[in-house]
Length: 329
Image (cartoon, rainbow, N blue to C red):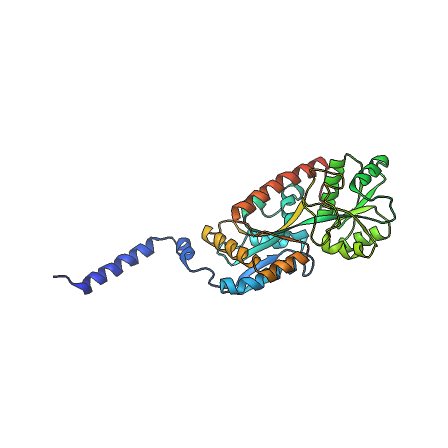
């Protein structure tokens, strides 16, 4: 005769031994995620181009994940402080890094970092990309990229371009442009994007690579002249501005990106679910429209797709940094 009570007791004991045999980290991974508030670490101060995108995404993810997503600005050391915090965080799905394509330049540009971009971080989602805008002072007799290249070649070492500082995206784009154009140009670093734009308006420098939101208003009121956007296609916010390929420099299409990463060791299930949630959030019309107004192209990739982009960019920027002999100050 069966004895249900005894059989049930034996099954419970067996289950208890089986659970004890599972390592603690594995048991932790089986818990429903997320089971606590989530942090998006932005390694830059509030404002700028990165912070508002992170906050827009975080607001939408609250309803999808059932937990608040808190944006934490941890600026300092050109983004390294916030990046280190995530690289050394527990891989439990509570801490993520919302960074830009500047991250892809770090392995070649910065030495002595307390983390390894390729070993200590894992890509989750390529959120959005955007082209740079090549702008000049309107007093120059230059109306195309082809004319700018001819001008720089005719005046070697006399054409200056500005940026927000050594190693900034504007600096690296300028050096990449100089290498591709085969011209000698002088880089003038400033303490931020604002001062470099003011210097261009004052005709202290001849051109800069900026974001569309940063210079669009100045272009529309005639204080700056836009020669090209660096994307493969024209930008919806500036449809009359040609691509850099159309304007005289083919095979140069370059865009910056905004993406979400986590600490190495993050369970695959969490990476996949977060990537899916981001993709769903980016499909919302209000979210897409806001990002389009910021001059961005919406993506929402898989972790594998973002990994491929990161590896490609690390290799491409390593080549530029080495050929241009760029060193951190």
